[in-house]
Length: 159
Image 1 (cartoon, rainbow, N blue to C red):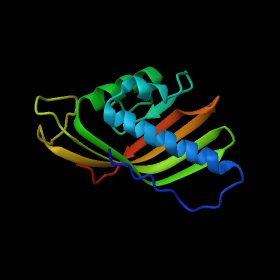
Image 2 (tube, rainbow, N blue to C red):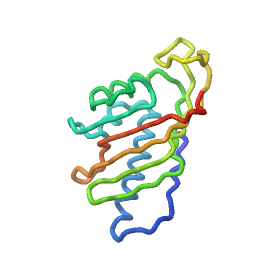
Image 3 (cartoon, helix red, strand yellow):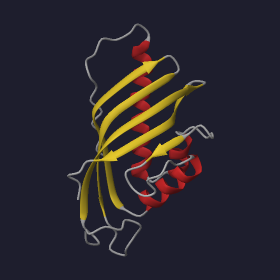
Image 4 (spheres, rainbow, N blue to C red):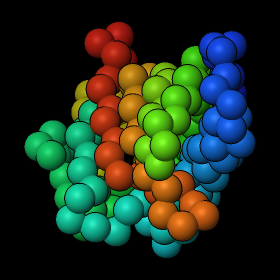
């Protein structure tokens, strides 16, 4: 897995450093679970609640609830090979029990030669490198940070 979790140098609010570090660590765990195709672990990092929402850069483009998002992630990630992911230009802000992580999600994968869920002009077996603007909103539930909302929007320069 390619992980570049670079942080900004903005002024720290007292007591916030540990929370920002915890969210940054959680983001690394999320990316690793996605690369490992460990969908059970990945689902455990999301708020399992009607309050969870997601907008994705792949179909379905409508707002997704937790069930739809978990199925979409499993279908999409499961359909590609050699997935690598990284968070570039990471900025984490904490507001009490809410944290917001904004970053550029850089990821690459091979389209399976046997076909798959990724329907686009690239040829089967081709490697694609993609970038998306990403916002993850975390809520603290007990001693852990869970994703309550995620929003991805692709760069126009993507293949």
